[in-house]
Image 1 (tube, rainbow, N blue to C red):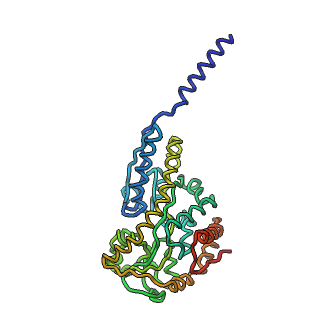
Image 2 (image 1 turned 90 degrees about the vertical axis):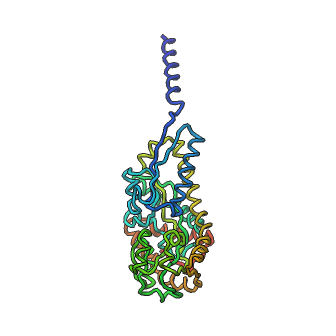
Image 3 (image 1 turned 180 degrees about the vertical axis):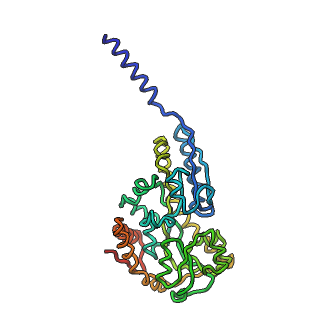
Length: 356
């Protein structure tokens, strides 16, 4: 009897090893998309770094194969619908700006609430990562409310102001219709300009026809969307490099991926995150020079103008903190951390905002 029991046990162990000891190789298809076109730095890096790097590392280090189905420039999702596209599973991975989700992700624009921050996108993304790591809500909300997982933060280049007219002091823009996206419209409002909500695909025509006379924009956007043709003045006011884009993956799709593939996606995600900073930093001076060669009047305003503009906004960060705290969000904690982290990374605020 004992011999029979032993034989059965050995057979069971062998079968267990045979079925679970080696992972079955999978052919994995992932749909990745953004509403923005690949001329945008972060989308270009999705197409030319994230996708090939995940594909290559999975092939080299696992038995699996990943194939991406790509859709940029609104081919699968529009700029303001990407969060919902990932949430519903229309796409598996999406890159998008949190600026288009003011109701769903109001706190994720926290660097916009602290204007005249660092103009260095490498520093910006490091600052943002430190805040996300210290405040679990910032990452967890994607999983808890929107059925997706944040796999990378995305830095933008430094924001300045492109216009159809010359200006040298804050009073010169009072009453002017100027465009922005989401929360950065407040930068204009507090300085006395008339803010207009807009998006890059419509910017050229809107500036040409006088719907508005300028754009809060980083130089790459001004170059790639040919705004220099309709707005001949690009002024370095230095609003800051903002990290308020992200790359997310649908949670249900994520749960079906082999663990080793998940690990590689997270690994490449962090590499991609860092690269959005370094590539933007390298491109910034090149893009300014390109604007000059294209006939744009590019100039840098003195620090006194930044101080004047920042003073017009000095009460706004506390106002936003109070508003979002009342909604149950950790706004005061996040803004305090961001102010302190920026200083630890070497930034000097033209006006030191105070958060209670």
